[in-house]
Amino acid sequence: MSFNPFKEKGIPIENQVTNWSNLNSKPFNKNEVHPYTRCRGILMNGIEVEAAIFLHQFARHTNDPDVKKDLALTRRVEQQQQKAINWLIPGDQSVLETTIGYEQVAVDLTAWMCQNEPDPYVKQVFDFGLLEDFDHLYRYANLLEMKQGIKAEKLVGKYTEIMPGRPTAEEHRHPYDDVRKPGDKKKMSPQTLMNVLTLVAGEQQTMNFYMNVGNTLEDMIGRGLYLEIGMVEEQHVTQYESLLDPKASWFEMLVMHEYNECYLYHSFMEQEVDPAAKQLWQTCLGMELTHFKMACDLMKKYEKMDAQEMLPAAFPKPIVFQSNVDYVRQVLANQVELTAQGTDFVPKTKLAKDSKYPQYQKTVNTGGAPSDQVIMEHVKKQGKDYRYLLKGEHPVERLREAA
Image (cartoon, rainbow, N blue to C red; front, side, top):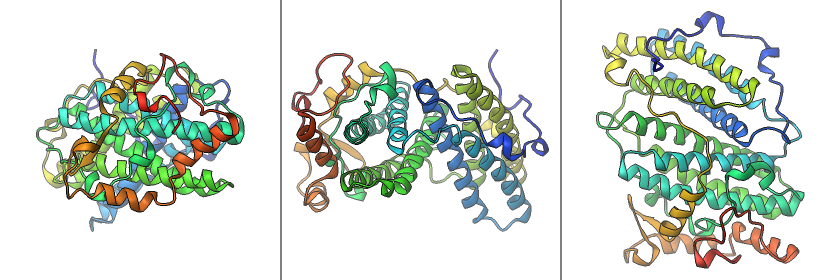
C-alpha cells in the first residue's frame, strides 16, 4: 500500500517544540558510520537549511500577520530539525573529512537523479553538474591525504570512485552561461520537481558550507581550493534553481517545499541502516506531514487552490543513495569535454566566436588555479596524485595522468 502524505497523520504542531537535550544529538562514530548514513545527514541538513531560508524569504514578502505567524511556527521547528540532524556530525571529524562527505553526496545523489530523470533537458543539466562535483571530490581527497594523511576511500567506502572529472579549472564560466531553461509547473513531472528542489537545496548547502569553512584552513593552497570550488558551487546553485518555474506563487512554493521534505524523509527512513538516524528520519517525517497539511490549508485559504490537483497522492520513486561507478564512468567518457553556451551544452572546440568562456577562463585562472596546484603539490611530495579506482583505468585518456 503506497504512502499518501495527504492522508497520513503527522505529529501535532503543538507537540513539535522540544528541549535542548533532544536536539543535542549523539554524534555518530566517524570510523564506523555507513558512508550513506553520513550522506543522508548532510543532505537533510541542507534541506532543512533551505526550508528555514525559504520561510524567512516568504515572511519578508507578505504583510499578512496570520501568515507570518504560521511561517514563524513552522520555521522554528524546521530550525530544531536542522540542529538535531547537523549535530550528528562528531567533533573529531575534520572540516576536510566532512567535505569528502559533501562531495560524495553531490556525486551519488546527482548520479541517481541522472538515471531517474524523465525530462531530457533536465537530465543533461544534471549530467553536466555531476562531472564537476566528481572532480571536486578528487581535488579535496588529494588535499586530505596531503595535509592529514587520511585516504578518502576510508570515508566513501567501496561505493564511489575518486579520480578526475571535468577539471575544476575548466569549470569556470561567465555567469550568463550558468542560467538554464526554466521549467513549467503545469508540465513538470513530480519526479523532476523533487529532483530539482532537492539538488537546489543540496548544492546551496555545499555553497554555504564552503563559504563559511574555507577560511578556517591554515595553508594557502587549501584556502584557495575552498574558495575556487566554492565559486563553482555558486554556479551550480544558479543552474539548478533556474530550472524551477518562476511563475509559482509563494504558497505554491511552500507546498512544494513541504511535500519534498516529506518525500525525502520517507525515502531515507525506508533505507536507513543506522537505528538512531532511522528514528530521527521517522520523527522528522511526522513533523513534516503536519507542516505539509498547514501549507496546503494556507494555499487553499489564500489562493483557493487544492494541493491534490498540483501534487500526486503517491510519492515519486524514492531517492536512493547507491554506488554509481558505471554510470559516472559512462558520462565521463562521453561528456567531459562539454562546456555551457547560453542554456545549452557544447564541446569546448565548438564554442561560438563571441563566447565569453575563453576570456572568463583567462581572467580567473591567471596565476594558476588552486585546484591544479593541489594536485601538483601532491605529486611533488608523494610522486603521484591520489586516486581510488574500482574498475580499471580512467575512461578518458587525457585524464589518466595527473596534470
